[in-house]
Length: 81
Length: 81
Image 1 (cartoon, each protein chain N blue to C red):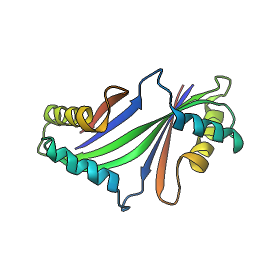
Image 2 (image 1 turned 45 degrees about the vertical axis):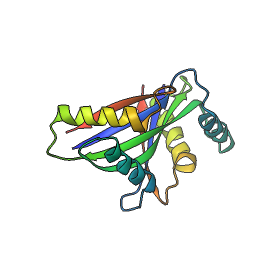
Image 3 (image 1 turned 90 degrees about the vertical axis):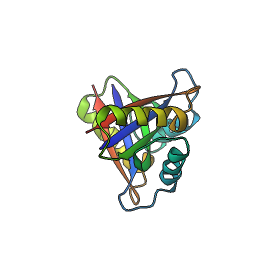
Image 4 (image 1 turned 60 degrees about the horizontal axis):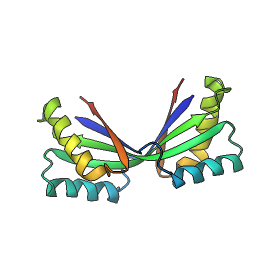
């Protein structure tokens, strides 16, 4: 079983990395890029003995406690059976 | 219009960040986490005047030239109309 976790900065927080990439886009001639926000993406391989509910519970805990900083970041968990 | 770009290390390449997070999972009592691979995730706001084909072309170029290092990374572009 596979889980995917997306971690993004909360809305309204400054994202200097995203801004830097957005400005670089103009210098290489990419048109129409108005805003970029950078986040993190995790692919997690899970023990196949877990059922979907157990897997989600473990990955939620993992994301909340380790992968994201809940003060400034949101996360989203996706379980791929 | 919104684009999402996922950048991941190619298979077979060592991912020390992912490995570190995977080992930390055990120390906080998360069960069943067998492997973690860390990547990058970008949310890109596009000029609404672009049509979907133009948007995809611009974002593909942007991802290929700036967001990913094609020697060691794969990327995937998703356009959300």
